[in-house]
Structure formats: C-alpha cells, structure tokens
Length: 296
Image 1 (cartoon, rainbow, N blue to C red):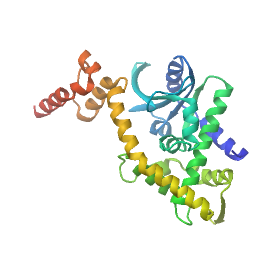
Image 2: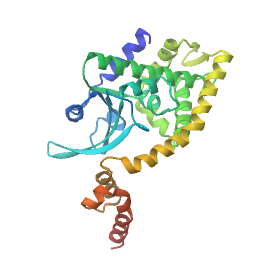
Image 3: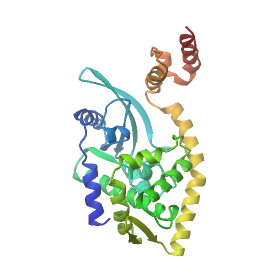
Image 4: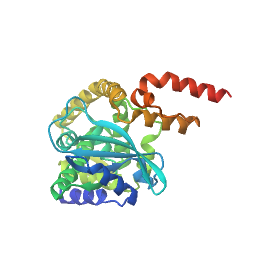
C-alpha cells in the first residue's frame, strides 16, 4: 500500500467506539488463539448500541474446516441492560487472502472497504496484519470499481456501481437504495478513499472537478471483468451453501431467533431447552405461538 492509504486506513480503524464495545471485544478476545477483534456495521456508523452489534473475531491456528466464517450470537449484560452481538469468527490468514481478492468470495473485501474499527489486537504484529488486510480490501474493491463503474463520474458513482454488483453476486436481500445509505453515512470517506486506492493499485486516472476517469488498459480491463464474472457466477451458489450451513451451525440461534421474533412481532417466545438446542425443529411451534397470540 502507499503511505497515504496506510495512514487513511490506520486512522479509520482507530475510530472511537463506546466503552461497552471495548468490553465485549475483551470478552471475545479471552478465547484461545484470538489475534484481533473488529467491530463494524450500522452501529459503528450511528454510535448506538441497540439492535445487534457486529463483530469479526480473527484467530490464529490451523485452516478452517469447511466454509467460513463461523457465525454465532451472544448476549452481554452491561450496566443493567442487555447488549446483543452477532459474531463471525475466521482465521486471520484466511481473512488476509480474502481481502486481497485471492479467493472467489467477495464478502470480506466488500464489507471491510466499509468502515470498521479494530477494537482489540493481540499485539502490534496482529494490528499491522489487520491494518494491511483492510487496506488490501480497499485495493480489491477499487480495482473492480474501476471497471464496473462509469467511464467518468464522481467517486460515489463508482462505489454505487460496485455495491450494487456485489449485492447481486452475494444474493443479499437489501432494501432498494441501501448503497445510498452506505454512501451517505460515509460522508467524505468514499470520496477520499477511491483516488488513494487507485494510486496505491497503480491505476491512473484523470480528474476534472469532482469527477474521476480511471485509465485501465484493455488487457487489464478484460482480466478484471473476467475475474468479476467468475465471482458473480460462483457467488450465489457459495452463499446459498453458506446460508444452509449457518442454519445448522449458527451458535446461539435459538436465543437470536427468540429475540428477533419478539422484536418484529411483539410476541415473547420463552427460550426452552428444546428451542435452544433445536431452533429449526422448534420453528413451526414458534410460528404457531405467534399466530395464536396475534389473533387474540
């Protein structure tokens, strides 16, 4: 990465977060082999603690068995209230490869080109590896944005095109205009990031006012578009498999489901041992309970 992009990423990762977030990160870091904990998502942008907080826990050790990340849900008692967190866990080495775009998966670099905070690191070496990986995510995203976006436009136009394409590739169900919310919350972040990332990636561009026009050679353009077509072709099946796997391996799925049901319907669902252990099998009974409660 360039010095300018290094500095940009390091500053962004050091964004202030509430003390409660640091407390949860310290709890998560107490597990064996944790190298770093990242906090991201809408709560980072808003500074609020309601809803579900999003964390990535990066670990050391042997390669994952099967698909990654492993996803779970936990609740934390803090200052008389309950904080809820969704926790994705994966190996730091895999995170590095995914951020560089070395894998067909798009989920890591698309998420971490967006704001995140490095809220815990095992040591300076781990901090540096995560910082370099987040910078690599920006490079990967910027390269694809150069060929998926318009020939010329403001930085937001390139990011908008990129996010729309990645949503389609990942089979993500997003509300219309979701990319606009991301760009609006980013304020000047994305405007500053794109030219920094293009310079670091060796992509020349012309600048006229607020508009940029990337200069990508024909061979490089064909290579990037072919790489993107492969990711789009494989992205949906990969994410379907990932969703099916998560349905059976999501740690804390029973508690998460009970909270979601009450949040969206107003119907409290007691978390019985059966519902906690077998959330999928318990689902029909939960739906029946909600249906009966809402009829009365």
